[in-house]
Length: 481
Ligand SMILES: CC(=O)N[C@H]1[C@@H](OP(=O)(O)OP(=O)(O)OC[C@H]2O[C@@H](n3ccc(=O)[nH]c3=O)[C@H](O)[C@@H]2O)O[C@H](CO)[C@@H](O)[C@@H]1O[C@H](C)C(=O)N[C@@H](C)C(=O)N[C@H](CCC(=O)O)C(=O)O
Ligand SMILES: Nc1ncnc2c1ncn2[C@@H]1O[C@H](COP(=O)(O)OP(=O)(O)OP(=O)(O)O)[C@@H](O)[C@H]1O
Ligand SMILES: N[C@H](CCC[C@H](N)C(=O)O)C(=O)O
Ligand SMILES: [Mg+2]
Image 1 (tube, rainbow, N blue to C red):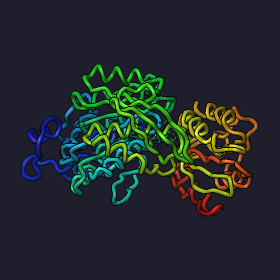
Image 2: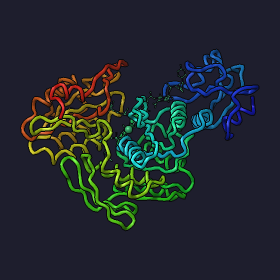
Image 3: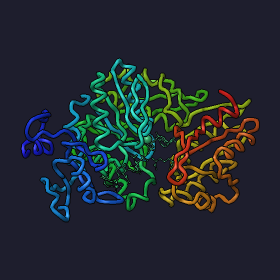
Image 4: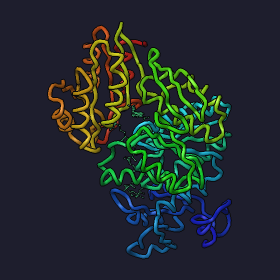
C-alpha cells in the first residue's frame, strides 16, 4: 500500500494497476468513488471533503488524502499533506498518464478562449494534431465536447488529456482561469509555454481583492511553466509588469507582444470590412496580413496565439500565414445576422472591460445608432453591475438591460444594480423579448450588440438551466446574414 500511495503522491512512472497496494483511481467527490480509489478530501467553498470520508469509504475508498486530520479515525490509512489540492492534481496526472507532449496555457481576464482556440487553429494549419480546452469544452478537428468549467477540475482535465493522447494529439492549449489556478486544478501539467492577455476586474465575489485575483493568475508564470520556458506577455495591458517580472524572476524566456512588443510589435491596424489589415514587426522582419475578425482586441489575441505556436516549434511563416484563416470562437464579437444596412453581433462580454472593448470595437460600424442589450450574472461579483451600466451608458446610444443567468438571485435586483448607472435604459427582463426589441429598433446603419452569453445555450434561473440561445433568437427573427 505505502509503495503505491507514495508513488501516487510523489513518484513518477507507471503505477501498479493490480496486486497488493494497487490504486485504481482518484476522486475528490465521495459520490463518485469506486472501489480501490483514493479519496482526496479537499477544502471547498461550501464544505470540507473530510465531511464525506464515511461515504467515500462506504463506496470503497482505500486511502484518504487530506490537509487536516479527520475528527474520528476512519479506519483506513489517512495521509495528511500541506496542499491537498496540488497533491490531487499531481495524482490525477499520474493516474491518467500518458498525456500530450506539448501543453501551453493562457491566462487573463479576457481573451483566453479566443487565444486557446487560435493556438489550436495555428497548430492545425501547420499540420499538427491539436486540441484546445476551456470555456467551450474540449475542441479538436473532430468537433467540440462541451464542459462546465473554463479550467476543468484536475480529474476531468487529466482524463481528457489522456483521451486526447490516445487519439494521437500531442499539442494542447488550455485556458487557465483564476479559480482553476487558485484551486490547483492545473498543478499536474507542465506547461511548455504560457501567456498573459490582460487583467481587469472580475470574480471579486471569489477573490478577496484585485491583489488576490492577480496572485492567482501569476501562479501560471511562477509555478507551472517549465524551467526556462517562454512566457508571452501582452505589454499593452496596464497590468503587464507583474507578469513580466514574474517571468523574469523565474528564469522564463520573456517574449513581449503588442504596440510596445519586442518579440512581436504591432506597427499598424486598419479596418478592412469586418476584418482588419495588420502590420507587425517580428524580430526585425515586417509582416502584413489580413485578420478576418472584428475588433482590435482580436489582433492582440491572434498575436499572442502566434507567439505561443512559434514558442512550441511552428515556423514563423506558417504561424503568420495561419492568422488569415482564423475563425473566431463562437460568440466572441460574432456577426450573427444583418438586416439591410444594420448588423447584429453576439459577444461574451461579461466584465466591464470586455463590454467597453466590444462597444468600442463596434462603434466604427454604427453609422446610425449603437444599441446594446445585456445583463449580469447572479451569484457573481455584484460590484461589476453598476460599472457595466455606466460603460453601456457611455458607449452605446440605446441600452436594454435584461437577464443573464440570474441563478439564485432575484433577477429584478440584478437589473436594478445595473440600472442605477444607466437610468435611461429600457428594462426588459425576459431576454428573448429584449433581443427582439433590440432588433425591432434597428434602423439604417444601426448595430445591435447582444452581450454576456456568447456561446451559452442556456439561461440559469434559480438552480434550473433551461435552453436559451441568443443566436437562435436572432436568426429566427432575421434569418442568416
Ligand atoms: C467556487 C468554485 O470554484 N467551486 C468549485 C470547487 O468546488 P468546491 O471545492 O468549493 O466544492 P464544495 O462544494 O465546497 O465541496 C468541497 C469538496 O467536497 C466534495 N464533496 C462535496 C459533496 C459531497 O457530497 N461529497 C463530496 O465529496 C467536493 O467534491 C469538493 O471536493 O471545485 C469543484 C470541482 O472542481 C467545482 O465544480 C466548483 O465549481 C463551481 C461549480 C463553479 O461554479 N465554479 C466557477 C465559479 C468557476 O470555477 N469558474 C471558473 C472561472 C470562469 C472564468 O474564467 O470566468 C472556471 O474555471 O470555470
Ligand atoms: N484581448 C482582449 N481584450 C479585451 N477584451 C477582450 C479580449 N479578448 C476578448 N475580449 C472580450 O471578452 C469577451 C470574452 O472573451 P473570451 O471568451 O476569449 O475570454 P475568456 O478570458 O475566455 O473569458 P472567460 O473568463 O469567461 O473564460 C469577448 O467576448 C470580448 O468581449
Ligand atoms: N465564467 C464566467 C462566465 C460568465 C458568463 C455570464 N453569462 C454569467 O453567467 O455571468 C462566470 O461564471 O462568471
Ligand atoms: Mg474562456
